[in-house]
Length: 441
Image 1 (tube, rainbow, N blue to C red):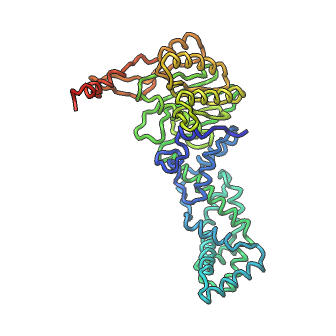
Image 2 (image 1 turned 30 degrees about the vertical axis):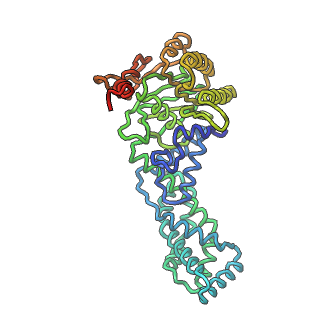
Image 3 (image 1 turned 90 degrees about the horizontal axis):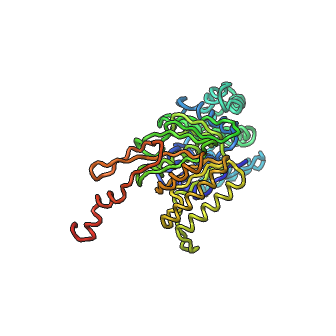
């Protein structure tokens, strides 16, 4: 079963923003090749849903953590080798030989530089096979997650082959020697050459991600088989924030709605994104920004955080919110295990309607115990009423204090419902009324 999500969620969590330094993909991307970056992005677009697959990938990252492996490979080398293998590709020895002779003749009459490019690609590939042989021997160990492929490569590139390739790695080969090397690399050993390159791209991602985990103190989540849904995280923080304050969270089927209150800027939205990112990464088998995490895999994750109006379709902010909730309600009704996040339900309408809608929608969602929810609101009265009506909600808030007339935020969760009301205090502190009345420039 495929994991389901959507563009709204990816944008809310800033998962794939290549041009934003704080995006999740850029946090993990220390890859050295274009192909490695493509694999990393594909992983981010396709989280896993079964426990065995999640554990297997997580174990791959764990294995390479702290190993200090540096690949003798970068983007320039990768592109040069791929050009050689595919640009004049033919796995027929006769066709390949004719092609090489043609390129050599053209080079003799200064009709192109493809011969030099081909020579450079052959020499570089020969050197790459030699330089990585020790790595394959090392990774052929039984505890390695790539032991089967590594063992096969170590055997394919034996001593005799390595000796020949060592002599060819400097380039400058005659036509006859180039034809012999080309037959070896692009015909006799092609399947193993392709396996080696694909494995190098995969290792590029594994080493990149495990290095990020080690340098940032990320932990690894433990995926569990369970009939009931649960999420339990100790000391989780947002991976893009410096000096982020960690928090704990526990949600399960017996208390499947985590109801969150607190004043503006107290940390609600950041916390909701933090937990969502941690779960999304955990479902990929990636390291997570948390001390400890246990969870049951879900079938999908959806957020409703930065829903905007749509001028082209004539949708107001409120109507866009309504359509978002309607869409997610249909997904919940399908019976799938989902993790849903709603930041300020129906904030685009008046307080009375927002109160009533938050009350009835939260209560309705809460009945679907296979799903887990985080719902935030400024309407604390709705929280008080829900605490009396629903037994499967847990209530937490981010407290704030006043230092004179300036709010101070601890960003640390407390159990209960917020009773802080600092809106007018902040407005007065910023001198808005004085500016309007002309008392202050």
